[in-house]
Length: 221
Image (tube, rainbow, N blue to C red; front, top):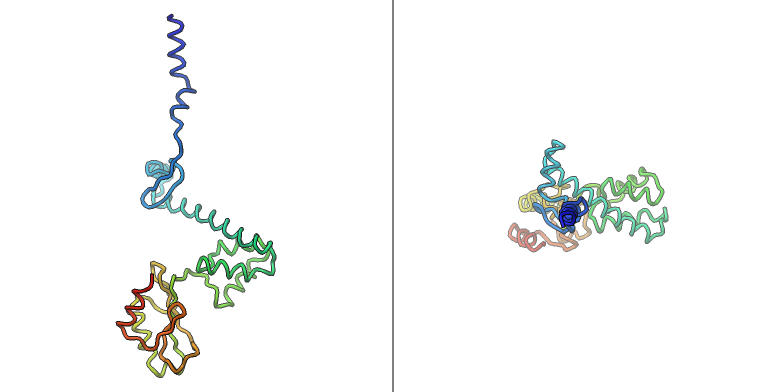
């Protein structure tokens, strides 16, 4: 009996038993606004990593999110390039599709596209900087353009631009911190009789007042 009892105790304390008991099922959780698919990225784990590495936990969290986003971008780029069968001549079409979906062309994305299509990065940069349809900096979800052409200029376009700048709080060529708006000035919109003119998401507004600009901006999601 004593031998049997000893065997039972030995089995209870065996490494296999302990390992089996500590084997938790990975779950999905959110830590301070960051979503993780594994328990090892919990807040406690981030703090332990922070102590060992001497790096703030927030920075580690950002690094993990960056890696996750890079993986997602790589998958998305692969789908787009595969749709064109990896054809080098489709470089512009691929970049246009990425621009439409992402609203800009990060350096990492350009490098990935060039690797998948087998074209030099210099070629992608020439295209991205030559065509106005592309942007190498983040663009807002809503584009606002104010015409500064001659016809609009003599009709107080600078004043209209000032009203727009004061309303959304950014300068021409800038994007708001929340990436909601990007403000640009253009030389001509082809509607001189309506000047001064502002365009928001392809909708034209003739000399809107401060109140009207506020209404237009507030209507943008």
